[in-house]
Image 1 (cartoon, rainbow, N blue to C red):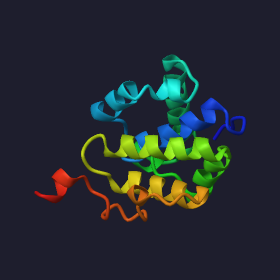
Image 2: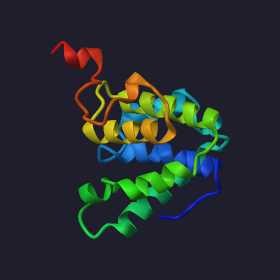
Image 3: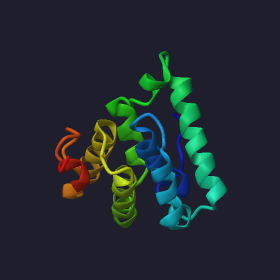
Length: 148
């Protein structure tokens, strides 16, 4: 994985990309949410640079993977920790976690991979956010999914 300057907009965008890719790829609801919440602007990026960060993250995943795309989307804990360490500003961490939770909830259900990323970020950054969960993927489902 490439590295970015600490607290830089690309380092922050990569955390969002990690959440988007955690369940295998971004869905329409997740991409719509990024636009609606002006995620690029919140991170200090032009929309094209946010898209470039997502593309570069995917390229890095594929380059590091010896298996299929589904295996590439599963980051090992040390790679995830390295990316999370590039964000040190506490306000930026909190903003990112809120944005990543919103992305994960956009399709109505937090998938297991998304829950793992959210829990790792909350744990690594020492942020208590009940929506980030414990990484099990089962505790924090959207209310509509819980009533089915």
